[in-house]
Image (tube, rainbow, N blue to C red; front, side, top):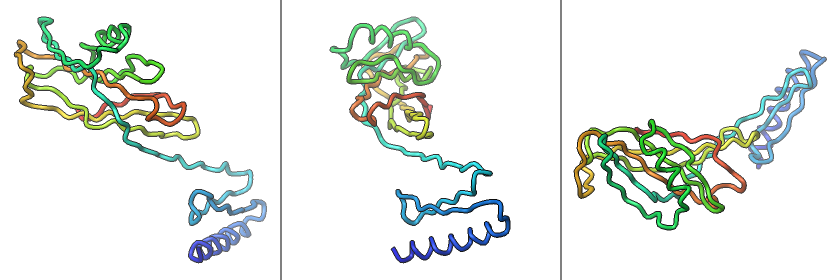
Amino acid sequence: MRKSFISLACMTMLLANIGCSNSKELVTVKQNEADPAAVVAEQGDKRPQKEMQIQEQAQIPFQRVIYTKIAQDDSSWEFSVADDLPQALKEAYREFRTSVPGAFLAGETEANYYVAVCTGQKPSSDQGTEVQAVTLSSSDAQKGMVSLHIEVKSLKHEEIGTELPGEVNVTQLLKVEKAHLPSGAKPDELILTGI
């Protein structure tokens, strides 16, 4: 506390001296309530106050509910635990199965968001991808912008019990429970990394 007070006093004297060199500008010092040691300076109305952008990140639990590999001849392999998934969401996911690499909001229910993760083509059916982490970040807290970062890892020698001919498209459907997101947060952008 004493160190914080001394830092605040030193900063006040420094800013007061700067303010005296130009008597038309008023200099005030505020102590940031979130961090008592942090000091924020404003210079009158002539200079707009620069607001700090806060980058918050949090790991978000997720579940892979569908994992699909589709060969060029339309033969496919699929793992699914999505028996209770609404038919409309299953159909929306099918639309993304041969999409370009990326992450897409396939749909939502009252309790969950469903994200299609398309990692593109792999040389053979024994290669795939695994989602390592889903991270929520708020890059612009004031505008309420929310990003979901989805990190994937390539897998080699993934045994699926069957062999598909040639290259395969690899796609997954993830379930992210809304209860794990900050209240009212809806992902404004989905960012896929690691492919």
